[in-house]
Image 1 (cartoon, rainbow, N blue to C red):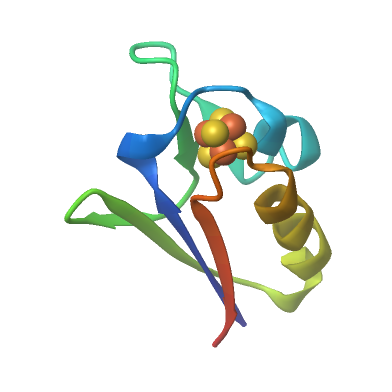
Image 2 (cartoon, helix red, strand yellow):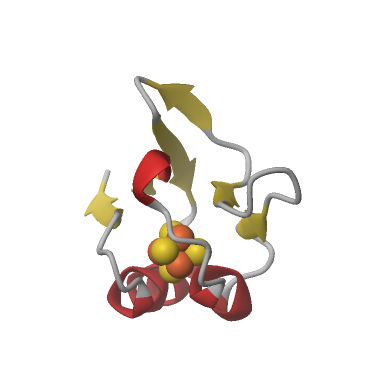
Length: 75
Ligand code: SF4
């Protein structure tokens, strides 16, 4: 498993993460920020445990994010 975290309040809504992995990232129509699907939110940070099969896409999302708010950690 891997843990993905998203510092949501700093999201600028570019949509790159959703382009890479729409099954895991979805742009929120209300405020234009990205939401990490099936995550829990604590102190503004969205966090989800996901399967190893998503590792490459999550690393690509992290690298593509212009404000570097997506972190990927081996759990
Ligand atoms: S790539 Fe980063 S800034 Fe862009 S929508 Fe995703 S989380 Fe937000």
